[in-house]
Image (cartoon, rainbow, N blue to C red; front, side):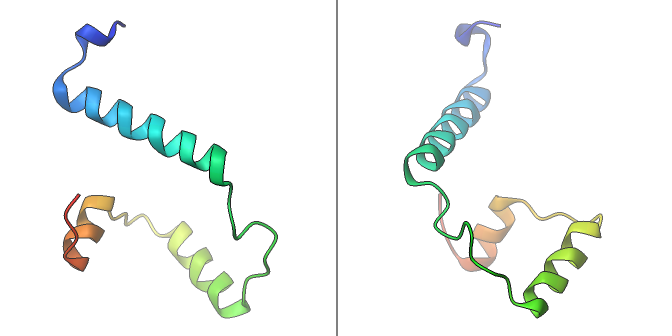
Length: 67
């Protein structure tokens, strides 16, 4: 697939993904190696087994953020 074949929305998603990937490469994960509290670990397990998912846009909207 060529870039010229992408819609504007697809192109923006591609650029956002590339920027996110690059920032992760440069900054790394500051929480890597830190221990999780048992309560947080249990909450995370429950979220991961739940079929319900929330998009980043929904979270931003709930917090009153504008991308």
